[in-house]
Length: 408
Image (tube, rainbow, N blue to C red):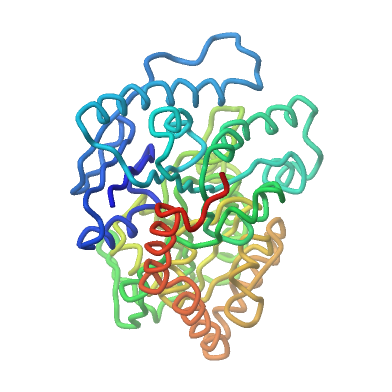
């Protein structure tokens, strides 16, 4: 079987899948189509594309995302014509929906099966858009959110089958399509992301261990979508109550999801200016290798993960796998994995006073909460271990490629 992967930042969600398939005798060849700006390396043939122009200036404000997708689709199509003319034809197309690369491929390979990865369907109410504002968005914003789904809708019309990583994310898609989208997580390497109470982390000459009072936080971007402002405010409160508390923060001072501050400052800069923090006890690590992230989780006394109702971070699942005591926001994506008092702790996303109190509770009750750590790791192993899920991905790909599963 020949497989074509399309992902702007490959490998992304396909990392473990393609590695699992590399030595599979049933897989003849795998080719990747990705953006030219993607500098990640992987041992597969790579076809790169880039948009030939920017989105039209002055276009209707609801249309820029869809036009960008069409521009991407056009350039991918041209690259794929050259690939087809070279004699290479896929048996299965696996594409990450939302950016547009898959949109025109049915015109090139009408009989090739298509398995599409769906992360998110935008809603203007009861979702990420209105959660932070705590009020309904404007009508203009609602229209813009509605049209952000145009690329997904176009992909849904040509796919043979879909896959989505969590039940929450799956539930956001229109009911008419859900029966054709499989809920199947990408999988966590639970053998690698495992506990080790003896692990240590050195930061600027100081060695931290699991015996220290350490609150941790990990994120791609320091932004409201992941509760960074709330965490920093809670941290300022917790520091005053606990003079030995140290904070280790993994992430980059940027906005990966959502909007930037209108005053031009980053949320980290704003926190420094407005909160009474003891910065000698706050350690920022930027983005780190997976090995370092594992160590951060291993020595953590309590790991805080906050999110609006949105796509769940891999880091939270990896944290569970290492057996952290997770303090998470009481929001839908986390409630799917974590039950308060069973395999973690939950708290209101906006209640910074309570977040600080629960950090203190976690530190004061390490033995009491030890079973929650064990249950967190069991959750990761039993429900999200890659070694159990990857064979399911392989079988799904075979079923779609051979026509066992099709909605066209």
